[in-house]
Image 1: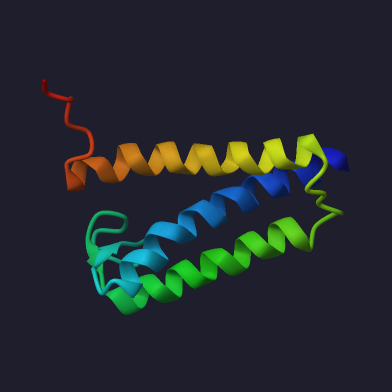
Image 2: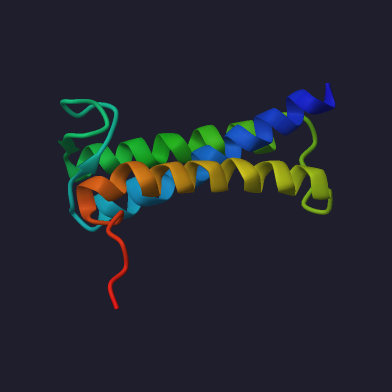
Amino acid sequence: MAWLHLLSYGFGGAFLVNAIPHFVSGVMGRPFQTPFAKPPGEGLSSSTTNVIWGFCNLVAGYLLIVRVGEFGIGHTSDIVACGVGGLFIAVFSARHFGRFHGGNQPERR
């Protein structure tokens, strides 16, 4: 069952990292992409929708990390699983949303 706990921690890390841009954009009053926009993941949702979506991601991350198994801050495998999940969603989001916000432009010297 240990691998199921690690999988849960990986998804928990992904949800926690995904909560950040939605919650921050919403609190700043800025629209941002959510799965509820038209088209999903590309259109913009209101700042209120983003705050709620960010909070839901935060709750999901908490449940997957704290309430599954016995997550230990001192257990390297638990931290690595959580970090890998967070890094995966961060890189995916940077590449996906970068095309809408100019983040996939090559650097110019």
